[in-house]
Image 1 (cartoon, helix red, strand yellow):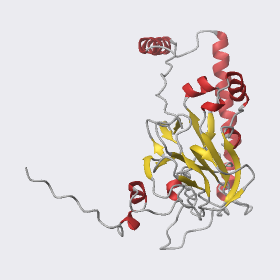
Image 2: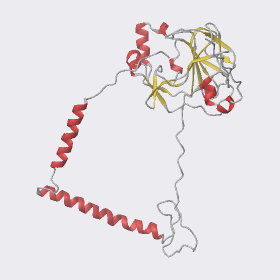
Image 3: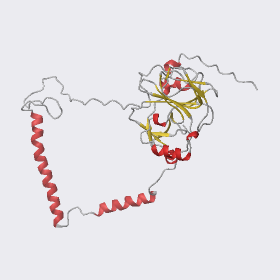
Image 4: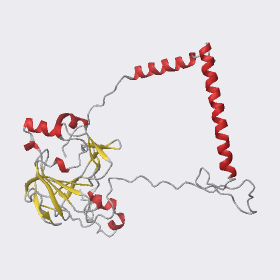
Length: 321
């Protein structure tokens, strides 16, 4: 949620050293003799050749059985073997059994379509920083720096609403246990206890949405709910603020499934400074579950079909000079 700069990369050795290493390896390879030059070398070569011959002899009977299928048992491919004497009927085309095409890997940043019942955390928000690749993000995913939620703003002090029915899991500045960190939080907690840094964190609410996902609402100036309280979608849970490392009043809204196996990697500079874990459970883009709004440009990009019904914003005529 804080703004961090890209940390310097560690280079184990320089480019000239890499070139020198490649030269030494290639020169050593060229200087090797093609044939053994000692009695032990010839013995090793003979053993290798003998092992290859034995392997071929062992494999040939198995291949013959799989092809001829004399006993009618399934072949190695899992299909019934065809007798060698069987002929292909005239006009028939022999086809190969193709393995099923693997499904494309699931994108963990897009929530399942089954997530419903969500409302906007602010009544009339402006998106100040969308979810996804961004130089302002604190995490990395697939080699890209990424912002793991949506930053939205309206006015300081505006009510913040629960985006979904659920149960409050955390409030205040001690919320990290509910954020889906992968590794232990103990070093981080010990550091913040020793340095008395808890007051520097944003006031945050974490809610179990009851559908397998958790929602996060950060940077509020005041929170009106308590841990264990049941809330309804649209219920006020706090007020928009700028607590923590924020440049202005806004709400950082995040959404994730605690059982997700994909992860985001935290900026190494933050890990070193705050002793936080290196990975968090991957977040999803909340824009996919929030109700469509014509005035949100990111919404129009995600749902071009719905955007066609949006009113056309008139362009101001050019002023005469």
